[in-house]
Image (cartoon, rainbow, N blue to C red; front, top):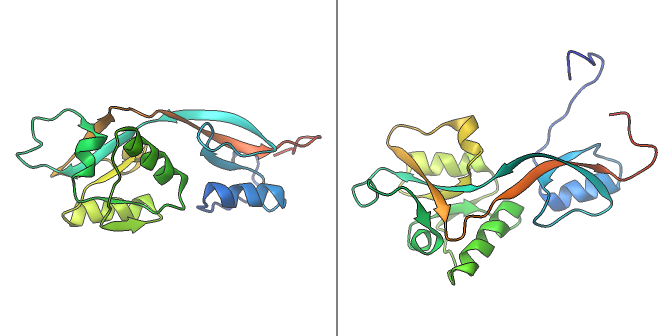
Length: 170
């Protein structure tokens, strides 16, 4: 995009889905990237970019070494650090826990995924994060990632932009 449009400047902000909705409604944002099928935004057009699932990130330890997946009920019994409840990702995670009759009691909460990964890497906590995060950060030595199952939520992530005519040139 930058090569094709050298006079354009791009500003990237990390926002909650509610803040993205507000920014699109007030013309402060041209587009956003968010979950499309969980808490859909209104008065927007969408373009799916990818689908994402969740993984349980923890330190390698003998009790989990042979495991190839993690259930929500099992994860609820671990020392968790999770995103804060103002983040849509956390609300998706909370619903998955509720489906299994569980309610997480995180010890640490943050509104950023990098903060969660830092706590898992440097502390004694575990977390549940989007699997796509591992494409950016990788998995450190001494950590392991287990796919979440029972249920295994899979959500569309994509671009949202104003549902207006004419459509923005951007």
